[in-house]
Length: 279
Image (cartoon, rainbow, N blue to C red; front, side, top):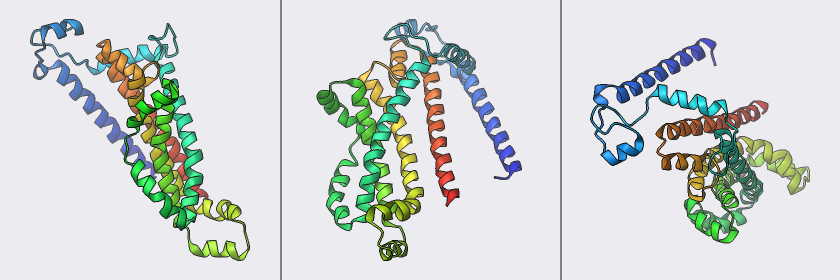
């Protein structure tokens, strides 16, 4: 990317951020943001029940609380009082394990489907039936059979990560140029060597696209899964802070969820670009 264009993009990003923060501050602190709350709810929130004060925290309050969370992110004071760093680490670990398990299943199976028209037709009905099912719909069954909340969350991540990788792998393998495969047959390469030496390099960008989609979906689903199973993780942290009526911490959790999701996506994007440039 041109350096001047990149610099201009950063300036526009900064201006948009400042505008959003100012609009947020005006919305919660200005006269137009007056909120009339139920007195009992306002008492729980620690807010004034009369007109003139918004229940929503402003950016300065959120930023101050965020600094406090990040100043000691790995403290552990018991089951229901862990630092934000520990909670994020639990979530990232679950996503990583479920995602890797899905890759170990989806990529070889995608090669099989992409290379074999027979297996493509035979397995397509199962894929079309199972793919639209919400991953969270599997949670009650997972909890009943596995009887472990953490492993159940990993299973849900496995399910939601499976389909984009499987479908993209099968598509990438099936669209490899037939000339290259015919050359491999002429050279009498084994199917395994053909898959490794010819098909994999050609299909790699499409496979990585599916993997990038999967990591985004996995991070999205883990928050909802942890809200259901409880215990640890950023999803549980959000739900626990809501139960404590700490809207500031809920907002900070949302910001950190988005930041970690962006980092995971950017990592996969860098790998995808590296593979594309290598070709």
